[in-house]
Image (cartoon, rainbow, N blue to C red):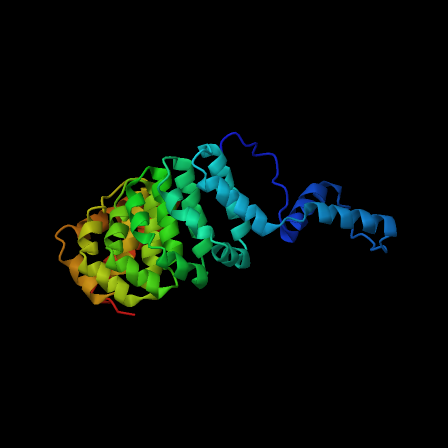
Length: 316
């Protein structure tokens, strides 16, 4: 949202779904405690509602084109451009409108938005890519053809808010769409994910870890590729015992649990001279602490999987 907006002021409804939500929010305090008796609508009230609906009807294509013109106008200020992106995002959350946005030439705003000097505009453009691509093969295909993946990986080293949105946009583009995933791997995308998992930026690290887990679960060969890139050895550096909850430690342990679902991942963990001792220390320090429950369970699983001899790791 552009700076200066009042967060308490609801947006004007832009479609029937938005109108219904607006009406429900506006009247929730007036709801009777008991179910109301439905009454026939009198003609005057019917006319009133028809006029109200007519006044709220929006020409979506026209509004999208107005926003596009704003974004392509070099004279527009950055706050106005950020607001225009918010407008587009409001509409394209509907998949049919997202597809129509491509058909009216809307993707022309994406590259300039990613290269904007404004952090807010870059973030908004990345959010837009995420909304267009999520579970939408039509838009995933056309975003791939736009060749934005390389720029998205570059933005992973931008300011924290931009980097976090870039990881989200990448995730939406590559999940459940193999052509995008293949292109991402070709440009070194898996190395980018590993780099983000090792960062001190907690939000970026969590998003990278989520994407890695999703890809490894969906495609076992991707997990094997991560292992070939020395993912185990790189993540081991983050396994440092702590007396209290440690988000970075939990991410490292979670990632190792994922990688040791393969025998090669187990073998690489066992080759570490210090991992077993560190895991035992983590268990000792975290035992009985509710806030450390997940990192405790991850450590216990790794001890059993890698050192008990009961399980050597099993490829899915």
